[in-house]
Image (cartoon, rainbow, N blue to C red; front, side, top):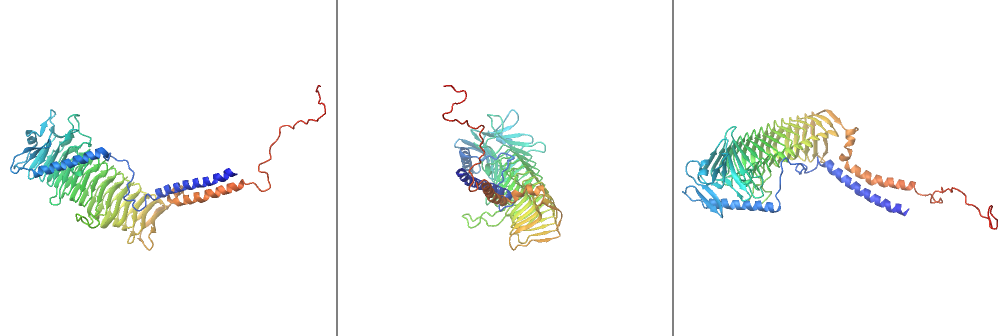
Amino acid sequence: MNRRLLTVPRLLAATAVAAIGLGTLAFTGSLSTDRPGSDTEQLRVQPAATLSEPTGVSAERQSTLLAEEDQRLLTLVASIRPGSGPYVQDLDGVRTLVLTPGGLSYRLADLVARGAAEVGDDGAVLLTEHVFVAPGARLTIDAPGRTLRLRSQNAGFVSLVAWKADLTLAGADGQPLTVTSWDPSTGRPDDSTVDGRAYVRDVSGGMQLRSVAASNLGFWAGRTSGVAWTGNSSTAATGSITGSTFRANHYGAFASQGKGLTVTDSDFSGNVVDGLSLHRSTASTTVQRSTARDNGRHGFSADQGSESVGYSEVTAEHNAAYGISFSGTPLSDGQSAGGASLRQYGKVKVDRGVLRGNGRAGLRVVDGNYVTVSHTQVAENTDGIVLAGTAAPTTIDTTTVAGNRRFGISVSGGAAAVTGNKLSGSDTAIRVRDASVAVTGNNVREASAHAISVVGAAAGSSLADNVIAGRGPSGLDVYRVSPGVTVAQTGNDVEGWVQDRDNLVYWSTFIPNHPMMLLWVVLLGVPLFLTLHSRRRQVAPGTKPYPDELRRERQPQRVHVGRQLVGSHR
């Protein structure tokens, strides 16, 4: 009896702990597709490319190399010899060929003639020393079908940098100019960034790439990331990319404080971070008929004050995070030492694109304005299109969104218009949370939770002339808006929706959708069961404490004292 009294409390305590754990897990799982902040959460995904984060000695080494590169370049700029011809400057044993202004463009042959490059037996040109194109000078490497190798090994690497100068790298259709890092000791491109790696950069000048295959370049920071356009507050970087490929670089291509960049018919694939990254006030960029796939973070990205970006007929697929990522967040949320802008950035246009199979979302726009998405196919991502904090006018129209796991289109915060789209195959096709959104004329099929869901402080939202079909708890979910909020509804066709209330699908998802029910059933049901079970086994007063069922196999033999037993002898 004492043992039972000691065991029941333990069972109750263990049951409560298990119930809380199960309830918490169920609660977390059930709200993972519809909770505040879920649009910006970091999902666990398998990167398409390996995004390695340098740590410890590796990080310190690369950071130090970056600082040394910055110092070398600043020293070169400060020590340029006006009126001088090309010369070699030695800084602590590091040789740099400085190309000074001299009228005509320098060519690849000039680099060989001045000892900064050498031609190999296979015809490839190996750049053996740093090349610095000084302000006002021009270097044109027009070499269809040839290979330019930049020395990059444990003993050090070289770079090709133009400073307020023009740099052109060009091949021809079907005969690209190949630009890659090269380790002479191994006879192959340098695939390690631990000790730095060769890179190409233009600073506040103009750089054009035509039919170039750039690979295995760059390390650590954007400006040394592979092929980079970098400007400053007074002089923006300019240039173009045409018919080129960027593969296995740190960033495929990177731009900071650039203006008027154009990217046409190019491919950014298998790079460690982003395919094409527009950073820090890069404005008026046009990307046409280009592809970004299998990159370690985003396919195309723009942030830190970048704006006026147009993506036309682009394909972004199988990137680890977002196919296209744009952040229009102000550079400061208040007074700052540098007086950074408080305004919101935007003017993002995505037209006739394909955004498919990305780890988080096909398109994500945070705090942007003047956002337009049209005639685009968004398929098989975790989320299709995610807008967070966007301002009017923001529109998504005539777009096909199919097979995305969680949300087809999600708008949280801000305002938008979602019009004339075709959506299918998501848990929730269109989700509006704490935003003012006009959802009009959309066709929804095969949703499995809600066709259209409006949640929270959604004042000003409306649902009109939408046609929905699917199966789940509700087709038009407007039951979770904040008190006092009314969502206008008119002309919606819900005939194709099957409300899942008493079938296998509904009950199979009952616990994830109602996690607290499991918690209360376990907490209240198990103690009740144990109490009833204990009462059944209690002994009534006046009865024996155990059943009297003992039986003896034979009766004991009686012995009479003083009487001789039969067959006994004296």
